[in-house]
Amino acid sequence: MHPIVNRFLKYIQIDTQSDPNNPEFPSTEKQWDLAYVLVEELKTIGMQDVTLDENCYIMATLPSNIDNKVPTIGFVAHIDTSPDFSGTNVTPKIHENYDGKDIVLNKEKNIILSPDYFEDLLLYKGQTLITTDGTTLLGADDKAGVTEIVSAMEHLIKNPQIKHGNIRICFTPDEEVGKGAHLFDVEKFGAEWAYTMDGSEIGELEYENFNAAGAKISIQGKSVHPGYAKDKMVNSILIGNEFASLLPKNEVP
Image (tube, rainbow, N blue to C red; front, side):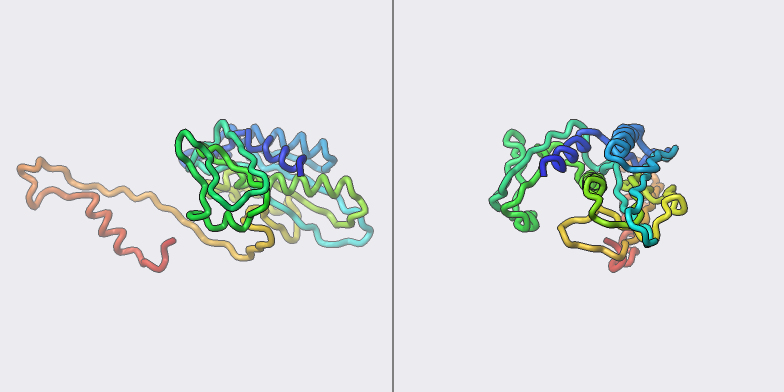
């Protein structure tokens, strides 16, 4: 457990927030910081064909150790974290043997993680939890997935008695801003099936994807001095309200 935790803690110390307002790819330069670390680590543990392309996609191979030809499978995770909250100066806290009660993340700011609000916490009673101090993201989405894949590959390399075909892995940028798959080179990856390690509880397997689309809408109103505004002023917020009311209510999140 300790090597896995230490690896995860190393990854979350590297700020990799993506930026939805930047059209460049990747959307932030700091995603490269973790990419370079991962490339060297993959080489160190013994992965083959380790590549980092110009768009910040990392790919590597664990060669087959069996004679029979079997389909290549892949494992994928993303290295960026959400732009919605800070990923800088993460201060992790480790809570061993969680007792199912409130966790005080930050006493000074009165930030509390409670099963009264997050019922799923009770699923992990008795386990070790890793949190932040409440002032940043932890980055487990998806550095936990990255940790799982690297650790699994290392385990297979150290235990060749576990038989497997070719395994391909890929770490992608900009998933949090909806661009993670845009420049993914499927042909280069070369896997017949692949699994994204980016879920929630142990044992869950999702085999369908949601579809998300975004739009930025500008509404131009008309500003008129209130003393002369009757029948002239056009309130853009009211137009926005009217527009929102026209959206089919069963087709929004």
